[in-house]
Length: 96
Image (cartoon, rainbow, N blue to C red):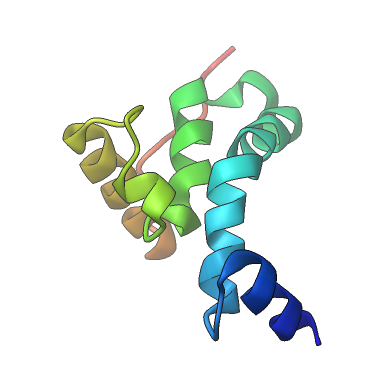
């Protein structure tokens, strides 16, 4: 029934996961950034939180077509998140 509702209301057929990621990119990315900032405080630059928030959303239309991100931003975000996925620590916490 849920899939039928989404199909009719939002023209979503079988790719519910992609739709969820699109919604997160459009409406909740800022909330993700705020959550990371709340969790880690000023331990990292705000750019780290922004890049992490885009991490799982890099295959969304919101990311690909974003007017807020340059191509170099997109490459940086993808490289950063790829290294995090591989467990390569590329960012050290700030010393306070």
